[in-house]
Amino acid sequence: MPAAALMSRSEAAEAKSTKAAAPKKATAPATPLTLPPVQPGPAYLMAGPMLGHVGPDRVHVWVRGTAAAPWKILLTEPGAQTREIDGGSLKAEAGLSGIAVVYGLKPGTSYTYQIVLDDREQLPLPLPSFTTAPETGHAGRQRIVFGSCVGQTVAAAAPVWAELAERRAMSTGEGAFDLLLMLGDNHYGNTTEIEKLRVYYTAHRLSAGWRDLSARSPVYAIWDDHDYGPNNSDGTEAGKADSLKTFQEFWANPACGEAGNPGCYFTFTRGDVQFFMLDGRYHRSPNKAEDAPGKTMLGTKQLEWLKRELQASKAKIKLLANGSEWESYGSEDSWTHFKQERDPFLRWIDEQKIEGVIFLSGDRHFSSGYHINGRFLELSAGPVGSVNSKLRANPERFTGHDEGRLWGVLDIDTTVSPPRVAYEFWQAGHSMRERREISWAQLHGREKIERTPGYVL
Ligand SMILES: [Fe+2]
Image (cartoon, rainbow, N blue to C red; front, side, top):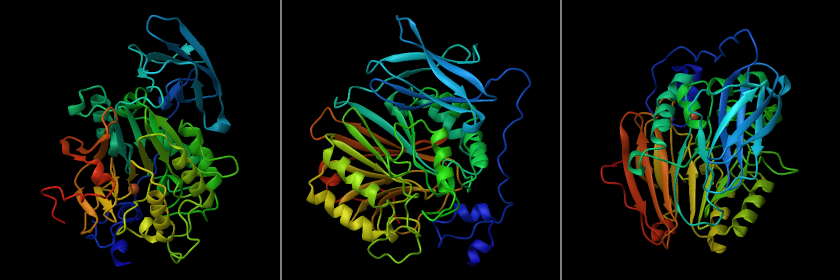
């Protein structure tokens, strides 16, 4: 395609979703990421600690060392004794990554922790702390950060991580939040090779802002094409089991697929908000396949699982997160080209009278809000580091931002009836660009979501 021919491979990949956008200036291909040399002496912490799932009674902690070594967590509840949790051994065959789960915690409680490698304490004072989730089913307010597309270099997303690390404990008006959702393109390894994937995952965890942020805030991740395999990759990718193995080494999610059906998907409930984190790659039909019955983004078993979980959900708000956009006028790499699966599913949600559904996505290198079919709310956020793509006219879009490094915030309050839902878009170095409340009637398609004043496309 002529536009792509003018671009480097990495730029072509970044601009994949905006085929009608102006061609970008040609630049050198992205330099492959590498890790700093390991210093001589005993094993030390190269990256982490990073929190994954933080439930009302447990925490998942990830670390990566420089050499094989036993490790443990020292966990302290203020005013109580310190507990020692054995993490086992960091092993070369697992990329020197380790994940430990600590059980028996109290809901809504702050804990401080230290990481010990080979009997040496790794973290300087003051030690990081985190707060466990409220009790499941408990009404409350929570602010959820979501974003995608970290960019080709570690530096690209560093301003966002540093800013989020600062904002996490500020006031809500200054962007404080409770947890972080990574919605794919969490690196651009563009491979299924385990060793290369390990380098890419680790490299992005070396920035000071990321370490600060992820040691204190729960982090949940799904993948999109670039951290699963090559650009626009799908279920035909030969090395996908290796990609999944590496994904599991590096993300401390609460679960990963199901017995008998691999994938990175999982669900968890925080208070009375339930999150459905979906895998849009492992079982995906090729984008170019005809959009006929049988073409799938989720695969039959994952879709059945999703329906079962939605039917069983008692949560007031249900967030369905996917790398690719859900809207009707998207790129070739979106649900727009999987309507044979999407549309019956959307109808099913209404037939089942499932309330409080919000769709989340990323991928596009701009941030947007859509009212899908005038019925469902979708919020798409990013890029946290990648080069921007330009917005184009789209009849379902009611707002959009396409300049700078962007992330989204969902601000949900379930202490009122019906729950109050607001979204925000934030830009690194430019604070909050937009905040809007979406009424319950708008969320269920009974009222139109008017365009945000100033949004003209
Ligand atoms: Fe991307």
